[in-house]
Image 1 (cartoon, rainbow, N blue to C red):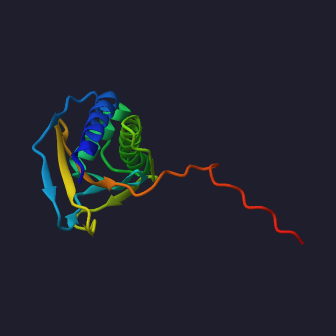
Image 2 (cartoon, helix red, strand yellow):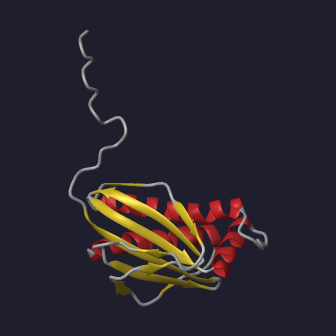
Image 3 (cartoon, rainbow, N blue to C red):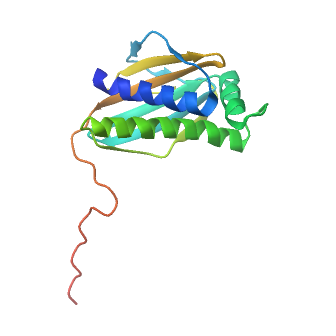
Length: 171
């Protein structure tokens, strides 16, 4: 993975998590994994296509998820109901969206998918030929680990409305 894709995600995560929760963050030691990823209690999954392509996972244990959502909602959250699930998924979405904007400013256009929230520990996910850069973010409420399986894309981004309209067939 190209390390130049790292900083936009770390910066975006610090900005978003600080703004949404008020927690002070510390980045742990980076790692690189090539094998199968085994999920934690919650994993937010987003994909990027364009000049940067691949997948990003945001993984955390249940206590961390509940701490994040409790801070975001300014009240104690004891279970991961649909609203809390949406909040966790949206954190991943906002971080990835902000990182995508930062990548765009560096000359790498990409489009992100809607988030998918995988509930439950122990699922095995392969990123195939994409090694994952592991970025632990530690704070008072626990740890969120970012898994970046990204590479430089092979093409340009086509946004909605940019595709040419085919001519109408003559009858």
